[in-house]
Image 1 (tube, one colour):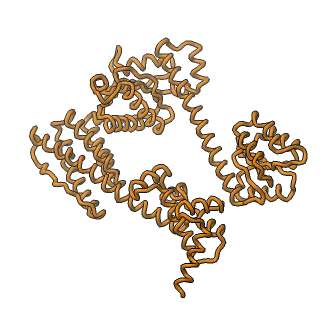
Image 2 (cartoon, rainbow, N blue to C red):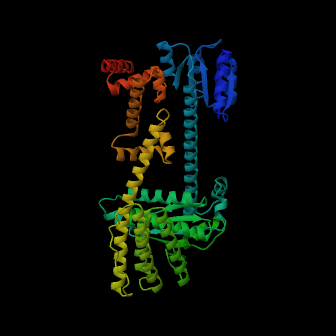
Image 3 (cartoon, rainbow, N blue to C red):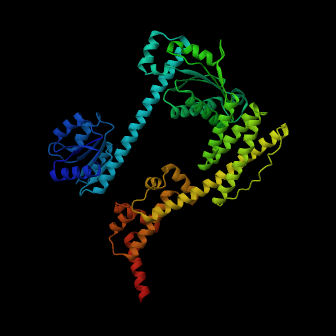
Length: 522
């Protein structure tokens, strides 16, 4: 990232350079003491930030900005000047100058402005990069769709190479993702529109694939709840991805998912054949159902479930545990209802979860109002139904536990935030408080309002004003010093906020306080 400093006063220019270099060593800094030199540097280096004096030897600083604004519309521009006339400020605003700083320079303010610009520039670059990635991904999906529709022409083969898709067609499989009852729900449900359901599911699938592996592309979808996935990942990763898809689709939409996986293929010319195999057209694809396979496969999958259950409990993610339980109950009742291995495992896991939760809730001082069911019945249809009902009741109780745990955690987090505000009121902000408790500013803002009943900013201002009142009463510090101590670098803004909340200015409040003290001492 680059910054250009322009000022014809050596001491100011050198001071700015030293200040910014000391605080931001990662910045590449350029300086110009006259407009011609500055313009030369500008067009050669293309800096991200420009800080310029309004009066330069050769040319007015505003004219300089006006002349380059068209070529550098995204550049962050700041003006430093000893002139406070309205016309200068007005012109600066019209030129989209970000800040108009009056001399003498407030070093703290300059540092904050540069830091703010750097953060915004990084965010903007990230946004643009994501947009490019999204566009490229969309182009890749279009090419794959075209291959399936019209075969792989020489032109499309060249496009495959240009877009970097060639590696995808090395040892790849095609998976048909079939969401059951999709059309029925989308057609007859009054609360779900088909277009919305398609969009929601597609977004979920894209999110899973984006995090799972680079070479996973969701390239086709139809109106019946079928999605086509092409991937070159190994079997273990693929199984994990499909399991996650199954769990997410069930958790979010209460829909079941089945998968058909083709054999491995090589080259884009065989893409259509792989696609047909995944759809069961002309040949039978391998059917990869959740928790399906031989007895050994069943045992292996059961061990995975136990691990997931323990892991979610350790993380206190009881919503995920509830979804896992519901998923397991439904699929096992449908596919392995009479399998004794599954039945015995289900009973043992049920008892283990209940025992663990009793201890965990007692430790957290949360009432675990759940009476465990007797699941020792035999493998008759009645016994299986009783076990399924026990799991269903447990899942509902887990959601209640999660709410209670979240409430407790949120209260503890906000308690830490308030202590942080009290400890460092001068530097406290929503962003710094979020960093302190390791969360996002948006989430902290929401939780703070839920727990305290007021917004974070409002609470911070109240605390700042109360601290300022005590300092006005108990110290001889200047008003601007007190403002700085409670987080206001600008004395005018501090006075305005103080009067808004107290009804009188800081000086008036101090005078009243002194009068009250004198009256009390008489």
